[in-house]
Image (cartoon, rainbow over the protein chains, first blue to last red):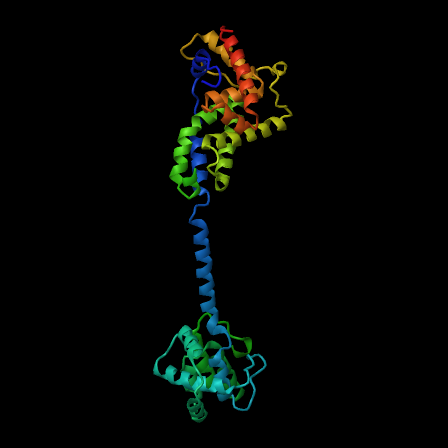
Length: 192
Length: 170
């Protein structure tokens, strides 16, 4: 050593004391810990996971909101009487919603759609005066409505309305159909 | 270390393979109790792993590693109520529990060397071990231990003088 006196005899003697190494178990524990430590991918992956989860939840929740479809169907199905206390209260009909309903009903009749696609269609819909007029002329029977791929909320409203009108058989059939279609949906107590 | 900080686990394995022996002996000969040495040794590496994000190329990895080791050992001595002194009159008795295994040289001579090493004041022994085991320069030793280069040089001289004496060469 240039900067201080190196003593070769001390160095040799020190080396002769042995060259212990850590036990293998210790090596393994430390190396395992080094692998467990956060890598450069961990943060981006966690962000990606959160994004995927957020998108999934958003998509899942979209059809469950009182969207244009359920709002639009309500005034037609329930012309004068109001729904039973337990059924969700429909919002006041709006011209734009009526127009949306008309378009959607036509599309629904043409092709049974998934809940997501119905919601997406409703979101894309724009009011059309001519369609609104057509909607006013449309009269849909209870059985047909129950069989149509409505949102679960609208369907249950329809069943509640049938019960209120004492159309028990139709209501029961519709409810049975509903249970088949949505086996895990929680049906309100008065409708069961 | 930079590669490891970027997520390259293989880079850590290479570093570990290169430094594990010297660091282990540095700790073992500092505390002289194998079980305690293993515990401290593992803690030092854990601190390295945890602190990798703060590593920068301001110092050699060796200096950085032994700075962490120095801090851990200092904590250990403080917990035990021992004061780090380099004075010649503060030599503690050589504790039991660590028996080096002499090899080629005369058994007695090596035993004297081992006893003299164990009896060195902590800071002198630490300086000697950093020099012998880690191959660090006085500047690096000073940086790792928070001392001046002059202080490191002085400690090393004291340590070498005592070890030479133990070998019958004083």
